[in-house]
Image 1: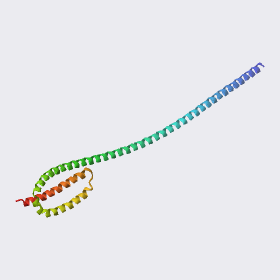
Image 2 (image 1 turned 135 degrees about the horizontal axis):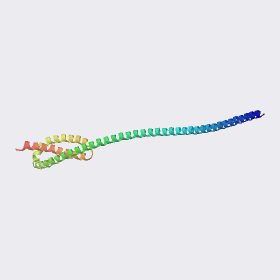
Image 3 (image 1 turned 45 degrees about the vertical axis):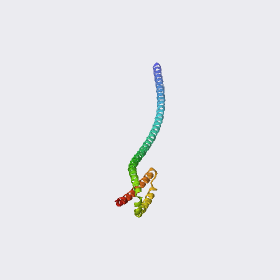
Image 4 (image 1 turned 180 degrees about the vertical axis):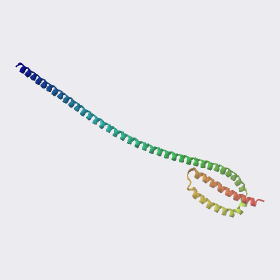
Length: 198
């Protein structure tokens, strides 16, 4: 009996050891399962975070693309503005050149008027001399009248042209016409007196 009891006890112990080993193994499997579940949860959380980060990166990438497009548009507009400014600068330069040309022409006209005014003063002195010889003038008056008619038609032509001129140039041209008419009269009178003086 003792051997049987010992064997039974040994078997019982062995059975208890096996049962305890199974419980320990099951407990460890449960712990591993729990740890794997925790790791799965953590991996899911990390996946969610990575997805969120991917979405944020995509959003940022889209924003950067939008900003790039806006910058490109602004650069294009700035180039257009630069081109417009260059055009305006060119127009201003052209206007400056035209103004310089007009100023130069006005100076030339002023100089010519001064010359004409000097000639007019000389002609006035000649007219005084011509007034002394009015009796001789009457004889040549018919020729002068023909010249005056020619001058009148030229004067009318000049009047028509003069109507197109504006501002100070109009006054200057009138002065020029008066001086030229006086000059032509003086030349006529001179030729008359030179031909008729003994």
